[in-house]
Image (cartoon, rainbow, N blue to C red; front, side):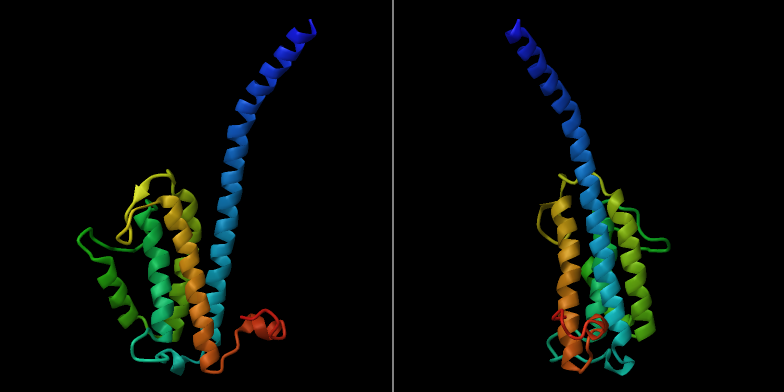
Length: 196
């Protein structure tokens, strides 16, 4: 009798776990995506805030001739933040045109050369991160392998590249800003305490 009750309880617990686990997995995935988007918006906001604090006449500055200028770093971040969600299956932003024959690297270099005005750069930063924040949650089949930058990886891996790429260029932009005497606005607010 006790053995039968124990067996039924065990079977019931297994059946319940089979139902709860997919729900929990779905909730965890939604929670992760919410955290991902929040961090993407945060880093995009910091890039735009730092660009706003940088004098317009310094947007053509670079620490050497071999690396991107300040505006080119920002526009590079804009391009990747716009291009990568589309490469993973998200709908393009309204008005964005790119044929299948277009080489993304060539297009990125064109953007970097063309978009140099401070106000335009800041507008593009805000547009690209707002687009990505809406586009990323629409990307499905995260285990699917794609090849967006010349190497195969899951869509999930490329989403992580999207986020780390933005942080990488925020760090670079902070170093550039500090080199020309610009203190990041959030560091000014916190009395230089956060190291940014």
